[in-house]
Image (cartoon, rainbow, N blue to C red; front, side, top):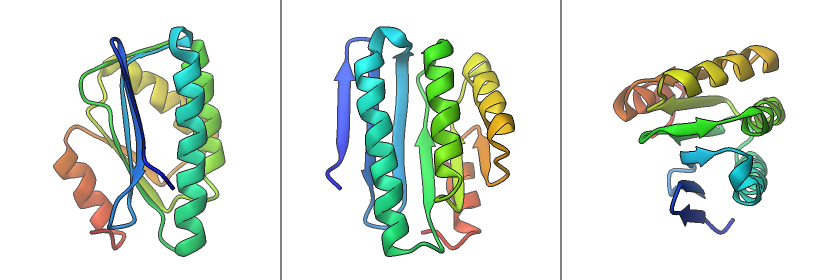
Length: 139
């Protein structure tokens, strides 16, 4: 999978598979329907990354999501996130999220509850998130 990275004045989204086979995602800025086109492209790239890593090692699919710098969300992005979390449930062994601010963290908590995800955790720092992933055999 080719890495995806798109930056606009008000948003940054990226998706890549690292040399360690961990899926690295970045979500920052205006994640509302104002940026629906890049959100949709990012969503497709995340799904592609999940399929790619799962095909290579289905027993260990790890994802690290960086949300530092803040986010602005709306119902469009909440629905997109909820659907993505539900879809990835079949692929991902563990997902660690860090840098989530209060309001987006509430949106993420809602999405996790709807998707019945117990293998996805939210952390304050990248170090805490990576350590939790390492417990599953990540690097």
